[in-house]
Image 1 (cartoon, rainbow, N blue to C red):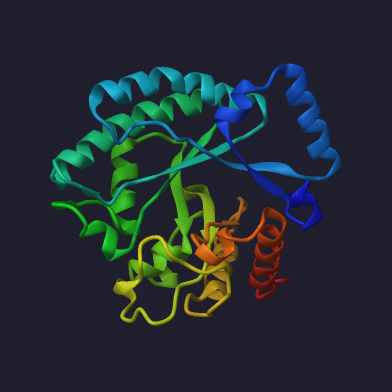
Image 2: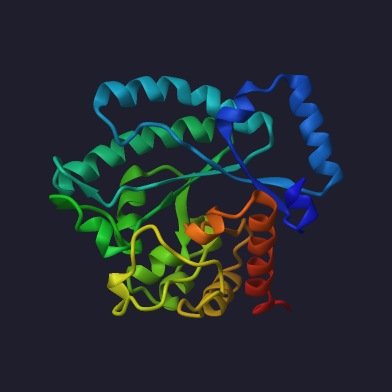
Length: 264
């Protein structure tokens, strides 16, 4: 209802929620969304691939049910994020584990017609927070995707991580639409120069500070013909303290301001 009221075109898909719906409940939800011209965006695959083997294996057995729930609701894209550090596994050990586990995940999702986006985390505060740094740049993520070797696996971009990793617009222009599954946009906080000092889990709504080149970022997506969803993930304490309606209203205004940069 809030998405419709404030002009959003999609809402995020929760596989755990969708899996609990009966056919009748899902039909009613789908009809309501159709009437409001709202579709599902990217689903968040929240399963335990980062944990110990027994926990991961149990989680993997539950994944087909979640994937089927997404497919039943018409969701075609899902994502997860790659933790950029580890206390026990060095880079190569962690890379091998991710390649195996995410390959198994991708196969299940592909069986249900779902593309799988992986998000790297760029802030130095994260990848230096444990004994062993891990993937925190787009180039490293692309190496992992190549090692996974599944046709439905791609990139979930985030302006905050792209910016914190010190990457340029050319890194976006070098991609293809097929490689990009989803996208988050947000802005950086002032007073954290150089770029690498940006905090891990604090950021502003899109186009709030102008520190991140949102216009250039969106133009680069247009150049490569990106046809997916764009959402925001502000991690903003002030926003979180607002009631839901005011928070959605402010978020909608920020998204419209960002899209106005590239309106044709």
